[in-house]
Length: 325
Image (cartoon, rainbow, N blue to C red; front, top):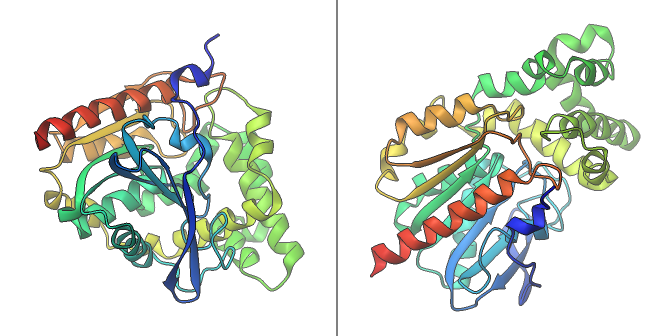
């Protein structure tokens, strides 16, 4: 069986790490890797609250790209940890711009997956003049239907996992699992917060892989990391991701002139392919790749998504460089 690493560029250590103050008491952890004089790309992680991982840099050629990664507000090594105050989509868009200006980058590629794809689109629509193009996967647009799918619809495929997820709260609260979990995750009871976070992340992890992967479930259930994702994810969900209804598709004409690679796992049960298809229909110029043997994340046992992301990045690089010539 092929290894996921066969489809990835070598993992290189960051050549620069620093902290960036962005206001409201938030300080971001930022890393740069690859070629300092290369084609700039910023990668936006998922969650919200998941933070960056070294492997996320490996679908970018380190000899070609200046790879910028950072932990969004409240996520990863950014501080304050798991904070919801001053944490909205508009705040994060502003942070990306502050980072671009701090780094002296005029225009960059914007890449993101899952929630990161939503944030990439929102950033691009707010600042199209600073974007060279986009690489997006696991498409998510923050709609009520997508939120409802996550908390209720996925039980059509994972009834066993969902039942354990729902039974974490008393039966009287199961009519609104989002509210039930959110109330616990923002409570002043640290034990209740952590227990809710572990329950939510256990359910989430079990639905993300093409094949069952206990190692993946264990890898994302570290206590503090689970708290950040669970709290921030539910915070954004209860606030409709701070988006107006249909906002992303409404404002898509602002970026349709830019090149884009969209990669989507056909069996993505976290961000189902219907959303990616709606984006593709609204953006007919997009290069759209369906990965038939993929769910939401790539694993060693199911590496096809990694292969597709690397290939998409290589094509996008050629397109951007050709446009600049």
